[in-house]
Length: 254
Image 1 (tube, rainbow, N blue to C red):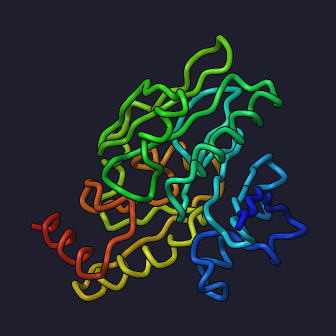
Image 2: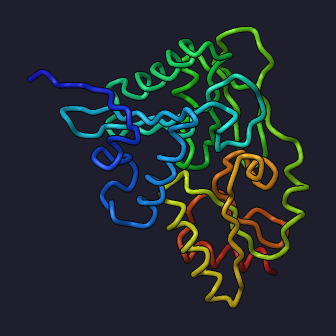
Image 3: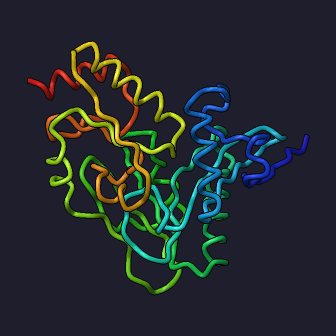
């Protein structure tokens, strides 16, 4: 039987029907609803969210946006930034197909190139290998394993990470969660840290980032959309279980 492969772009008119890829098994959850609301506000900024469908079933997706509206802490001009890339069916070239779709879009918009932030220590960022396969080049690194890759399309200044990561951490002695709604799992990640902190009698402060300027100034890592700081140290930039949150809080509190 011949399989039907289709790319479906989400937009304000079809998002309720199509929905985003992540957490789709819980469409009534706070995280899922927050993500859909976040997307509706981002489409007008040029964000693209494209799902790849195999026989009308979701097989993966890519999300990318102009760098001036990106949720990743990367400086630069005239680039597209890939936020997320995920495929649930591997070995069929779907990830490369989505990446190439983004590159073609960048060419049509006459962009300088496409940027992505990777990290080998978490599934919350895409894998580096698939981008190297698609002619991306690593150009910078940041603390905690973050890597900056670019697919250059024309001669232009390279994007770059900030260099003041230590100074950012020094601003926060108390337990602080810095977040946006770019990822539907942010809500769960926040609840787990708050619940763990409550068990230890620690009060958590949540900062909901309202704009890119604030994100670029406050985020403790290039990931941007979620960071937990305690006693001037990075607790996490991805989801922890309640048990793991308690363990890390105790370690940093000693």
